[in-house]
Image (tube, rainbow, N blue to C red; front, side, top):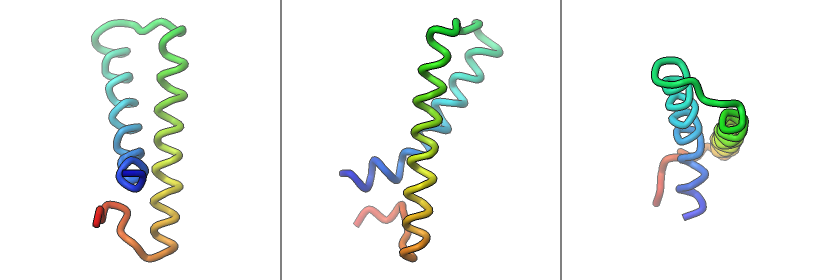
Amino acid sequence: MKKKLLALCAPIGLLLYAAYTVCDRFIVKIPDAVAYPVMIVSILFLLAGIVYNGYCFGKKKNPYDFR
């Protein structure tokens, strides 16, 4: 379970950032009280995913191999 969450952190962070950007630019202007926490969470997800992918790359493993 832990490996699945870590492996999916980067796509989740990217999806959260893309949803925020599309919503902010094209649908409605998001207030700063909501925007800052969303951006911090998406950046944390992206960083966790990048670190895990780098760890797996160093161990010569596929991060998306859930066996």
